[in-house]
Length: 452
Image (cartoon, rainbow, N blue to C red; front, side):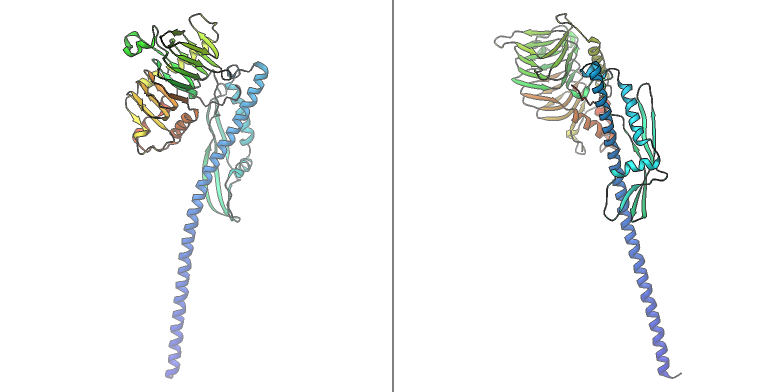
């Protein structure tokens, strides 16, 4: 073989090696790129499926709440036509009947074939351009409910074996299985529990109000205390046996709420107090109302609503209803008095809740505006000029020193309780170990009052 021919063969051989190398490098690059794309797409699919689960849970909750509201509204409307217009009359003894209708409606929507449940859930899922998420129809989810028919208590209600599929075109590129909880209906019945979330002030041994002017919106409760527990400062309010109760001294006050309840007296000394209004009537339950002159201040009060006084001065009706509320409120006393530590979200840098909460075994003094819940085994002192929205529970007494607006906060209390129930792991040990829900559990209200 001549030299030129040999050179040509070598050149062709080297060219073949080069071509093979190029093909290998290209193939490896394509393979790496494919892996990176699949990994990137996989992460996105996983995130989208996680988000879809949250959206689906919110959608089912909203749907069940709509069913609950509808059943409750229709039920009250029917009962109003049959029995009268008061919420108390409408609600009494109707819990089991409500839950029976509520569960029947749930079953009509969700207790169908797996494919049928998928058809209900699919419209709740987020839409995405170029891709889609669906509930796998075969075999599809299963509706499961465990409840006590006599009491209406739902022990468990879930949609289980829900499988979400992420599709690009017709190809399933990701799946996620989950269980969707259906919570208990968000309603309250007056014969079952006190409407605790509408209270602004609860003091086991008395409420003491003085100062220039104050307004109170929300139900109010005050207990009594033994003579030996009295404090010298309280003598000026005019209280006598039974000691405690609700006391107004040289102040102008407006009080609005469903119920003002005390196991003691309401003492009004040199004060002008208006309870309720023409448009918003109030119910007062007390031993008696004492109007005590305190020259030069004039004593005067007006009650727009009903007075139920145990001194015999008014015709007494429905005593068992108020006695039951007193019993339920007092059932929290042991828990509140058992608080053995101090927690304040205001002093907790790790706290991320929507509103403040203070749970204490010490006196709590407010010197500025406050939105949230205070529960203490001792006293709460609300200084002059502080506005409060939420709920205050004191194992001893509450002192209000004037120029205050104190308003109950149903939404605030619900928000705090809901945050606690949804929290898997608290951000701090103290927050996790001491909760608002631990102390108001005896009075569980999730009220939707449609008719007033």
